[in-house]
Image (cartoon, rainbow, N blue to C red; front, side):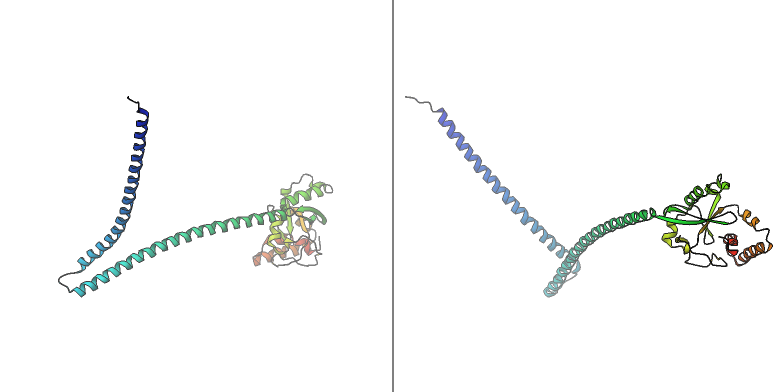
Length: 290
């Protein structure tokens, strides 16, 4: 009697194929590993072969004629030592190059760090200076219209001389009608016999400690003669007056003795090369005028 064995025979054939594939895969892995080992050995042999070939080539080049075996060995040893020295030198140079690269990289990092620190210090300094400019000070001044009129105003250290003159006008216009149409550009501020330009600030004189210009508290003035070239730490009330200097000279024309003293002072400054502008305001101190 015949039997159907199709399913069992197919299963057996599939199992045999799987085993054959596993065996083939293992053989492939073994061959692959052997090839890799052969390549490693080949590379090492190439290095030694290169070194040996270079030594042999140099030995052939430097050897002329017949030589003894000892001479050949000695020459070969010298060539090998020289080549090894050169190879070691190349390795040292590579290491030095790496060290230089690392040092340059570290130097760049340090530079960036210093720049960051410098910027932080600059910003901190700027904050402190801005805070200083916002501090208030009392400015005592004397308005001159033929006689002195002392007043005081509150200003910030960051304010300019021009802003001071504007504030002075606000105070003085209430009492002096001739100033109602006057602008700050038409006024001058004179401190310690020096005309201060409008664009300077009190902060400029305070931080630089420019003579007595950086203090604004007032001392009684007992000096007979003022001299802008003489350094002093005393501070006196600054003067606010119109730019029309000739007007004030005309006020003393009626007294020949006063006029002669003023002109003598100006001629002396011209002769000695001093600044005339300080002499123009010296006449009010010559005659104890505040």
